[in-house]
Amino acid sequence: MSQPATTRPQWEVADVVRRFGEGYQAERHLPSSHLRVLRHIRTCRTVVLGGHMEACDNCAYQRPAYNSCGDRHCPKCGTMAKEKWLAERRAELLPVPYFHKVFTMPHELNALTLANKKIVLGLLFKAVAETLLQFGRDPRSRLGGKVGFTLVLHTWNQQLLDHFHLHCVIPAGALSGDGQTWIRAKYDTFLFHVKNLADVFRGKFLTLLEEAFDAHELCFPGQLADLAAPPVFADLLLGLRRKHWIVYSKAPFHGGPEQVLDYLGRYTHRVAISNHRLVEVSDAGVTFSYRDRSDENKKKLQTVTGHEFLRRFLLHVLPRGFQRIRHYGFLAARTKAESLAKCRAALAVAAPAKPAPQTAVERLLKVAGIDVLKCPCCETGRMSRGAVLQRLQSAYRLPPLTDCLNTS
Image (cartoon, rainbow, N blue to C red; front, side):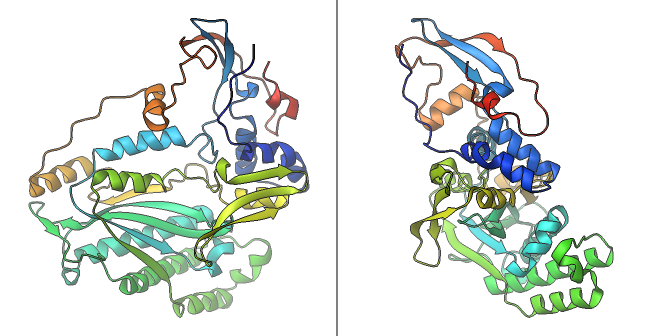
């Protein structure tokens, strides 16, 4: 019986890992976090992770269904997590315009950040959050209350190079100090002046970075060794204080909550590159598409060696347990339920109905229009779960390629 057609992309990041991963690993001393990501991507939805058999209740068709790796860096494992997250956020949206801002770190800090991801990126979140909360409280901003916002970390640009920035989605208003009044933003095109935001953001971040240096919290491996000297580090900070830092602001959303959710979904659970951007994977290298921001956002192709592709991809592996999506102000997790109730009362709107829980199958059908239980062979029967396929026992290093490709 012929196999049904597949809708998967022609090439996947997993193909790059399987073709070049062992050689790349042999040439470099990789941290455990990188080894873990390579292993997860290589074995995702393969016989290595086990799974179960599925059989059609109408015809003789059977297929194996292998388990996903669940790694947040895997291009195949983010869609359902994103949809579940967005469903939870839908209940938190307010009937007000929302702004989108982007805070970018200067590239002079890229090498230091790569060597100290947990510390420096944590300082980035803290500096941006303190800046926005300060502007929200300041009466000169015409708010003078507590704002709420979501920050999402991205560490890449379109060519997979390091580019550290935070996307911010923030409602156009604030909750008054007594929690009784919603203070509407007076501006139609921006919430806070971006130059002022940039200046305060720069000052807060560099102060935090200097404090981390004085507390000996930073490490300076390899080519960064000279920065460990206080005069050299002081010169770096001086140069950064003189530099113009970039804060980008877009006009507010006016399309209602669904537009905000759609926009959030573009940023929250992204990985450095999606499988659909891969054009070719061969012994000669990896070709992928990208948007050239410096050339009217035109779509172009770039080819790099397999090892260079993996190097760039692994630049964006985050420390284990590091939260790349964080909420602040009246959206902070600890007080969110109470604060949102006050916001809705001040806006005289009712809380949205709690969405009915959905299974992964129902969510995939709603989002992608794919009914995974429909038999792909007879197209009338339903697939049911059968025998369990045991997980293969493999070493921490990348398992043999034949283990991953075996679908028997």
